[in-house]
Length: 158
Image (cartoon, rainbow, N blue to C red; front, side, top):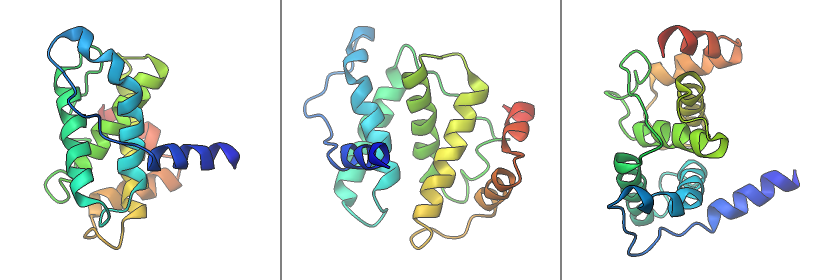
């Protein structure tokens, strides 16, 4: 319980880096912890709070992901089924995958990267049900997760 409280506190304390520089390959590693905290903050902060900071955090995350020499995320239509109905979830998916990759240093693990991305989407979706339209694609993932079938689905489709 103490660890969960500590993680939530770190996520609340997240500040988008000012004047960050993402040009060369070596520019990305110093921001890895910031990316992990950014993803936690995006997932744990209600969608209707701190909207300007959310936009800045999404921008930072996207710029980092676009040029990162290590973290490579694959967006497959069979997996990111919610893109057309709830596009806000794409950043959460990519963030969850990036966080997994950075914490484990397993940059080629598409199965678990995909799984962590979907699990992040589920967590965010459940925390923000009051601010998001019902999404049948995410609801399907929630049911799969509850039945213990999500990993199997990802293994077949990732």
